[in-house]
Length: 388
Image 1: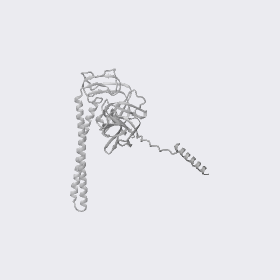
Image 2 (image 1 turned 180 degrees about the vertical axis):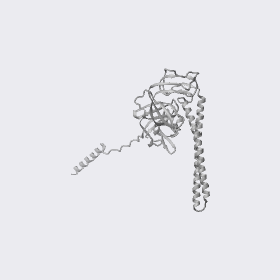
Image 3 (image 1 turned 60 degrees about the vertical axis):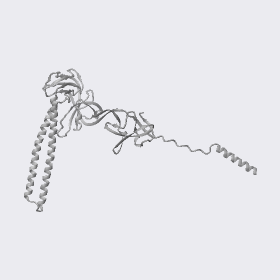
Image 4 (image 1 turned 90 degrees about the vertical axis):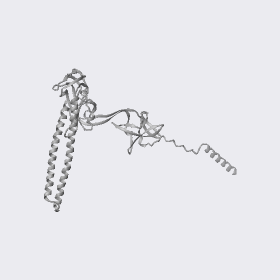
């Protein structure tokens, strides 16, 4: 019996040793190191950025462009002759219109001054009349309690009537002067239609120059067309712009036009920019010539016109969503040595989904464009896609 117990104990010990040798107890695995925040990046580079201003207008048809300059002027240079094919925005000739352009500038200043005087006087009279009306009301209340006489009320009402009459008379005279100044501006705008600020006559549309009545060194007639352009069936876009935008636009500039009804987007050329506002809308009319080879457009279709102004070239441009804001501070994250780096920036122009960065970044850096909202300075990062 004792021999059997000894044998069983030995077998148990051997089995335990065997299980231990076979690794019956597994060692715990080490946790993997953090891979970092997943981000997308893009290499920073220099580009050109525009401020974009989009306004809506309509299309209209035009078959022939006739250029009139309703003033006698000397032609100093000619760039095209009858029979030439010209494009919208081409310079046809240069005229000595220095005095007319100066008159246009003076007329515009006079009109703005007249309008300002009208508005200033109207504001003064409104205050005077408001005070006179209040004085009448106060005296009537005092009269009810015996603290004012009917004579005082009569005198106050007479003062109110006098103020109203003076306002009507003065504003009528100022309005007449303003309308006269506006008429002068409109007349000079007619003279200078299709002429830029340097006296260059600009082709309003593309086509064949069938008539050219300008010769270098000679005077042009103010009673006959200076030039006539025959083109293929062509369309134009007419839009109204604000006083803030109109000083930034000139004949010959280009703009993007989108016509959703025709599912088309193309580049157009500014034909003319009116320098006098519509009296009712206070907006300025801009006419653009569309490419002659554009099909499917009909008069009356709505068009969205995007003007590119305030151009900044060879500047750092980044996606707008990459720029974060905290209070008055704007900042981004770049990747350096596998880690996120916090960089404060100052910004300039904003365009279509992009922003100009004036300080803080340089070309060649890796800018975080996705995942930046989850970063802190110094965080390890893992680039999952984007430009190296």
